Length: 257
Image (cartoon, rainbow, N blue to C red; front, side, top):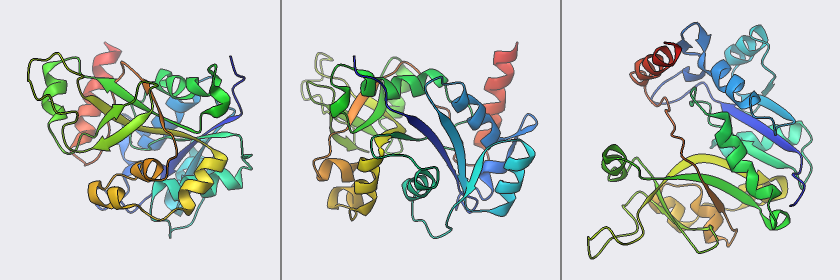
């Protein structure tokens, strides 16, 4: 087994979301959402450090009040990846360190998912792994219904577990329709990249496939940067719109029973 390099978790927290302004600060049973995400991330034992990366004084002040380590980053970033890169530079992540982009709108994130995401870096060929992400097989009729939606990204893998392609379309297409072929995998938007790979990724221009599908991870594949996909049995419950908060509260209350 390969020794796991230093690992850093970074939670980008932008205030001006077009669909949900101020989303990181939304109250979920007495805590701002970013606090719940941070506490879940800190429960993963593989991180040396987890920090919030924001662009707004209101979020920074709230982080101080809740004792969440936070960094102020530029308001000019076009993506969460750019914000994560600036934060990784600020904390001094070395070129071989692994930087995890932890979505700030996943208050029910399972810490085990982060461990699964990082595991390939400690595997037999861990020294060659540049980037990882997660995917989940379809296990229910609900999964299969969700898979048809363009909002749920699908991924297909090669024999070594590397991503071949991501799409909003339902891939692979089962021509025979007999259920005997390779089924779709639902992509989960967590990413871990070596710092050197993150620097390279951010310096590359958006690719043609990336622009077509509106999927940033395709930039890696278009530039022959291998992306290892780890499988998980866990699911995400993100907050994209204000109406999603009620579902999060419902799940939390059910778990407390």
